Length: 138
Image (tube, rainbow, N blue to C red; front, side):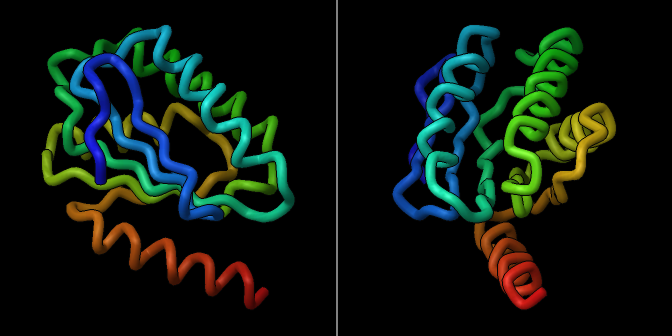
């Protein structure tokens, strides 16, 4: 997956309904708003969307608790805006610290989005494929 420019997310909508997002090493509040704007086109057409989120470049030393709670609030707002349209979110990073941050983020969001954390993109993609199959068969 392509890397994000420092301070900004990389968003790829070329595999819809899969949305690929790569986190930068350093996060900013401005980047969070820009991310929401970049995701908007993916929701202009009907159907479920699935997030494949690369956290492997994220530097946990550069993500403070205030930003994490703001990101969780923004995620909840986004999930409510697109209620029933997010089929799942698969994140990946081999960093134990980043995995812990993801767990805390998941606890803070309190929404109906199924989120999972994986050590590799391949296992994250596999989970999304299984999740899509389950939801489409229902």
